[in-house]
Amino acid sequence: MAASPLTIEPLGDACLVVRLGTGIDASTSRTVAAATASLAAAALPGVVDIAPTFNTVAVVFDPLRADASDLSGAIQARLRSLEGAVPTTGATGPIVEIPVAYGGDDGPDLAAVAAHARLDPEEIVRLHTTAEHVVGMIGFAPGFPYLLGLPAALAIPRRATPRTRVPAGSVAIAERQTGIYPWTSPGGWHVIGRTPRAMFDADRDPPALLRAGDLVRFVPVAGPTSAGKGIR
Image (cartoon, rainbow, N blue to C red; front, side):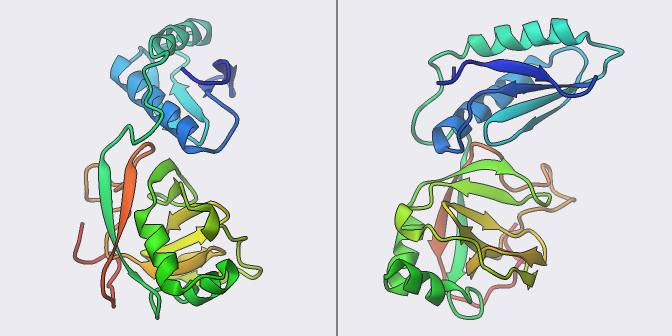
């Protein structure tokens, strides 16, 4: 189901790492998302958690209820059945619209990004809102999405000096990715806007707004925002 051969490696005595590729790209992310969904639906005996990354899926199991070798064979059989069934474009999950107030106090780095790209700030916003962003993985903090698909024209190294405080809801870019900060925290990405949508809410089911494989569309709105309040 992946361009690279599927491999399964042990991680300690209670986890198997399923490697589905080696790159960090939207195509591999779609494969990972499809594999994650398939393994979750299979409800393999002894499996207690399934965690996707950019190009792997960690399958955590109870060693008292499952044999690692038997489980590895079951995973192989399950995922081989998906060969050729993963779409090469679009998303394997739902499409989620994220409203963003760009620039100003909400996006203090927009002007710097525009200068780096040698484009007007308005063109930065246009490129960012018309691109197809796919959630590669959730990490760094609960609910923080690493979004693939940032246009090449917007690629920019991380800030030389990270900020000690990035407000919750900040939409930021670095290299070829976009991230959204679920809480106020330190961060070294370039903040170009802010959303009122809560990326993580412990009282919501599921708590994280986004999952690997989801397609995100950013929608420009007028600021100011109040991150974490209002839109859920």
